[in-house]
Amino acid sequence: MIERIGSKSWRVQVTNDGEIVVLGLRADTGREYEILLSTVDSTPIVTDLLNEMVRTHQGKPPRIFSENTGPSHTKSVPVQPLSTQIDHDGAKPVLVMDFGGTVLKVAIDPAELQQALSTPEA
Image (cartoon, rainbow, N blue to C red; front, side, top):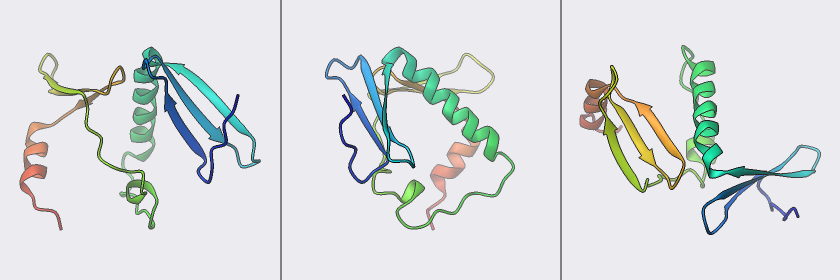
């Protein structure tokens, strides 16, 4: 059963047991679709999505977003992982953040991170 999405073009729901993620999408035609994912699928899907975004935007100037879009969108808020660890096994440290079954791994450059943390925002 597809629930109405409202004014947005997407909806995300997670079952109370945390096992199923539902992504509802509305196409330009107005048709609505639901994609059901197991939480075991969520980590590789999020990783693939972010890797493709990095690949296609690498070497391009930073995007500028208009009001209420991208990082300025009202739904773009900081998220707090359930746990955060640093994995030191590889060439670069990896920040490992667990969002309740979806685990995001981000390679970090310690010097770049330190510089970003010490630079006041404009």
